Each structure stands twice: as C-alpha cells, then as structure tokens.
Amino acid sequence: MFAYVIYIIAGLGAGVGTGLAGLSAAAIISPMLITFLNIDAYEAVGIALASDVLASAVSAYTYGKNKNLDIKNGFIMLISVLIMTMVGSYIARLVPTSTMGSFSVFMTTLLGIKFMVRPVMTSRDVQEGKSQKEKNKQSIFCGCLIGFICGFVGAGGGMMLLLILTSVLQYELKTAVGTSVFIMTFTAFTGAFSHFYLGGLSHIDALIVCILATLIGARIAALFANKAKPETLNRVTGLVLTVLGLSMLLVKYL
Image (cartoon, one colour):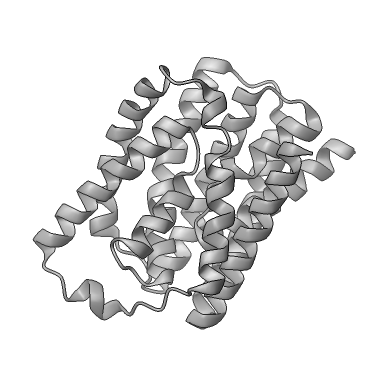
C-alpha cells in the first residue's frame, strides 16, 4: 500500500508540473521511486519518461486547442534537441556523474523563484514581429543548446526548454509551456523506449499507476493554466517549481 501511495503522489506531482510548467516528470517521479522504494535508478527514469509521454501529449493538445502552441518552430527545435542530446550523452560519459547530479534540482528551484519575483509578461507580438528565417535560426540554436545540456546532465529537459523559450526566444508563458510539452512528448517517448529496451521492466504496477496519475494531474493543470491570467499563472508556476525544487533538495540531502 505504501508503494502505491508513493506512485500516486509522484505521478500527480509530476503531472501538475508538466501541465502547469512543462516540467519533465523525470525530475519528480524518478527521485521519489529511488529514494522511498529503492527502485533501480535506470528503471525509475524509464518509468518517469514513460509517464511523461501521455501527460505531455494531453497537455500539448490542451494548449494547442487554446492556441498556445507553436508547432512549426517547436518541430524544428525538436530535431535539434534529439540530435544534440545524443552528442551530450556521449560527452557526458567522460565526466563523473556526481559532479552533475544536482544541476536540474537547483535550476528548478531558481527558475521557480524567478517566475515569482520577475514574471514573464511577454506578449505574442514579440514573436509575431520576427521573420520566419530568424525564428528558424533561433529554434535550431536553442534546440542544440537544450539538447546538449539535457544529454550532458541527464535531466532537466522541461526546465531548460521553459527557461530558453521564455528568456531567449521571448515566448509568452502559455505558448512557452505548450511548445515545451509538445517537444517533450517525443523526447520522452524516445527516452522511455531506449530505457526499457536496454534495461527491461520489472515494476509494471509502478509504470501503470504513475502513467495514470501523471495523466490526470497534467490534464487538470493544463486546463487551469490555459484559463488563468498571465500574472496568476506566473505566480502559481513559480510556487510549484520552487516547492518541487526544495522538496527534491530535502530528499537528496537529508
């Protein structure tokens, strides 16, 4: 029973993070499964990535339905992310994992504080004022940067996407999250497939419960996010990211 409680809490938390802020489920589910249930780290990441697929897909559908999704530039960025993730993963083999393990946790917390202190209030006019050629160049460059960092660090994809889309590409928050979860749908599927193919799956119950809980959490959070005012969304997103980041820091170091 304790295991199922952890599955549900982890899944719901990951779903809310995904639907509200485009946060990768791997940043929440895998640490909880590893810490509280001693599930093998490689399998835990696979379960988290698999949970991310449907949660990101249903979130992307909700954002797209509300016209908060940039599919064209998102697809260009997706290709760059996938290619550079492989490059980053290869180079990461040369660096001790202990030096990189805390990166995404600290960045999640700092990003949450940033949204509360300095909300993203960019309007759609900023992106619409750019030429398609300029958008393509920026999407490719940022996709390469995000992919390399994600492959090198091994986590933080959703967090890095949100940071780059809002700070560098100057997307308004809702479109940034919608585009982020669209990209994550494909990257999570690729990651989950490779994890289960190479490492197998022994905790089928964890997989099923986490997928369902994450899907429910993401759907509810995405519906709320698309109806919320920009100021409210910034505050809630910042609060969620900060709480999740601090929680993971406590789990990691206490």
